[in-house]
Length: 206
Image (tube, rainbow, N blue to C red; front, side, top):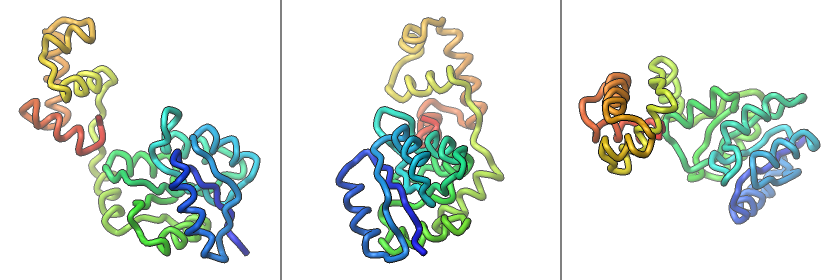
């Protein structure tokens, strides 16, 4: 019995490569390809794949995490296996919390991808040992919750903007910016602008 797979990646050359890899496995059959999250959801609803092999970044549309959540709401719901180059904790945790069966990096061996698909179809959680330990650590120590405005401030901070420039960009006062920064520093447990930017980038907040 073969496991049916829908490939989702915004790069045609990557989809072609994955199709070639999966063609070597008699236990796996690619039944469709999608370039966007929206297309993946539509195709999955019609094709009913056992597993959706999905990238995390999908161009201008919805990302792999949001696509995963929507795919898992289908009936029947396919298992979703994330295959990406991004390994930041926030993205790994986000994918798992959205219902992904696993998370693999694109530098793994082809056999690991095939094995991951079969395990995901069987209901297993598919994570490399180092990623698994980070997921468990993240679940025990969840990432700080920043407001949308605090994220905006952080993004502007990362561009090198001064408080005055941030205030101008967000149409608020400098005092308001300072207040946001104080909250950000407290939530991220940092004491400098550079450290706040570093932590935010490392954890995938920005």
